[in-house]
Amino acid sequence: MSDAPLLRVVRGEPDDTELAALLAVLAASAAGAGTGDAPAASPWRDRARSVHAPVQHGPGAWRTASLPQ
Image (tube, rainbow, N blue to C red):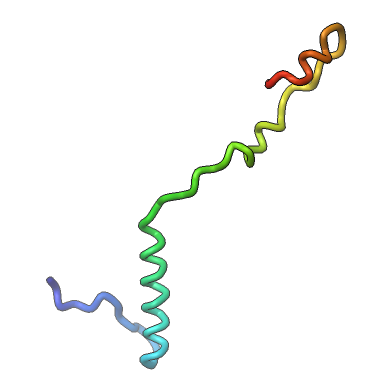
């Protein structure tokens, strides 16, 4: 493995606390970025279910009003 540092301070002189905070943030973001497991969307939250064609008027319209579109 290489002896080159993974992180280098280019400007300023951070103390140990600031470096520890930076490393904690980088470690947390790296740990969360690799999962890629998004929760499955619930069909109940799908707004496309509520969008459908308007009910047609005329004979039998009461019957088709409750049918899935």
